[in-house]
Length: 223
Image 1 (cartoon, one colour):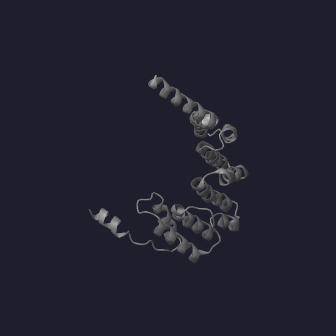
Image 2 (cartoon, one colour):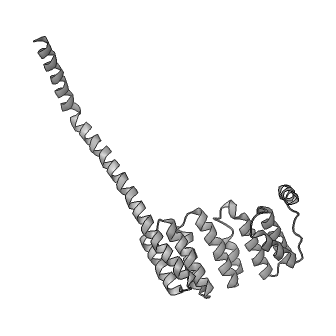
Image 3 (cartoon, rainbow, N blue to C red):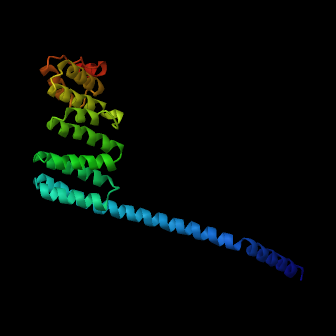
């Protein structure tokens, strides 16, 4: 009987607890399980989007290889509209810009690069600004080209920025300033950077002298 009485007291206590906290507990459980389900669905959706975007991007690359610019532009627009938040959309825009530039469609090239600047992450934005400055250079829009290089570019692109500034300054016949820009590019570039040799050639072509290799690179060459 004592055991039965104790059990009844525990049951009554549990019932009181549930009356007081039951609704809150159920609400919390619903929220937890709902959040878990939403998290799983979001991950599934993101993976699905990435796979679909990668397939389209591979097809775009194939069209780029065959120089089918019309198809490249259509597929880039498709990736941008359906998978705007993915890296594939930014890569597609850069590829479409190159395709348009190769056939001298500078208007489309600029539009694609501007799309990256407006929608991409910092790294892709930096790359797009440098490439857009090159298109503007071809159009002889020197001030606009320099403006693209003046803001919104990550520090790791400093060498490429100075190199492009040198190109713009040469086009304006500002040779002394161009030499300084090319020297800044070489100083910012690692000695193993594949673009370093081209910058050195451009510097020497306008009467400049490339700096000696850095100590580490000289020692490695000697070894």
